[in-house]
Image 1 (cartoon, rainbow, N blue to C red):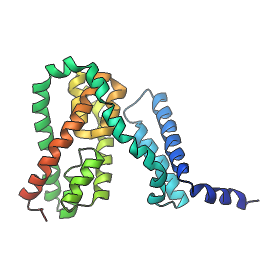
Image 2 (image 1 turned 120 degrees about the vertical axis):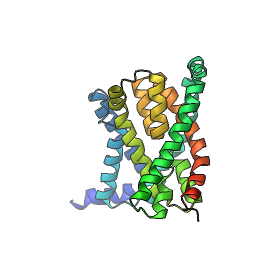
Image 3 (image 1 turned 90 degrees about the vertical axis):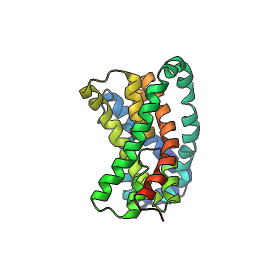
Image 4 (image 1 turned 45 degrees about the horizontal axis):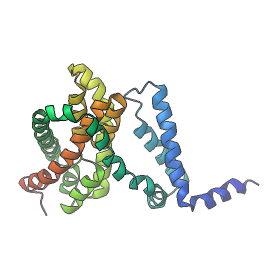
Length: 242
């Protein structure tokens, strides 16, 4: 009788849809927790969901590849979710047009600062070249960051971890930091977090205000494009090119 739960788990663990269900349940639980906290910045649903799924994978000894076979359906939806940002962009188009010049200036300043500061600090600390290359595109969405790192000889898996950490830190810090700085304009707040913390920061911005979410989505997309151009140049200037 005691073998029954184990046998059931062995059967279920071979079913790819199990891990899709686990991912969705973890997100529902994490989001409910965040909602009960009043969407406090420290109670980030992405962080909670990652912790829940990671704990289950460790406890069951499940390889990441096995998990991803089921969770890839959620991964596929990242594309449509990104495209769906066009809906609030259309709704707030007049406001976007009025802020084109400030956004362009913030984009260049933010993208250059993100890449240059990461490389400069890591170089000063003696970080190995492969890690430096993986670190450089940390402020853009994972798919693009991993592609940049791989093309330059970095480790895509490490880049993915750094991207997630950057996004989580940005999502947690953005509200208290902006409040402390006295920045009340939701367009500016949203653009800043989208620029620094990509999709995770954008998700946080949408929970705060639709305008913030719209500008975060714009920043996320534009920063991915600009960073893809900047990182190869920065890596070569730093003498890290293969």
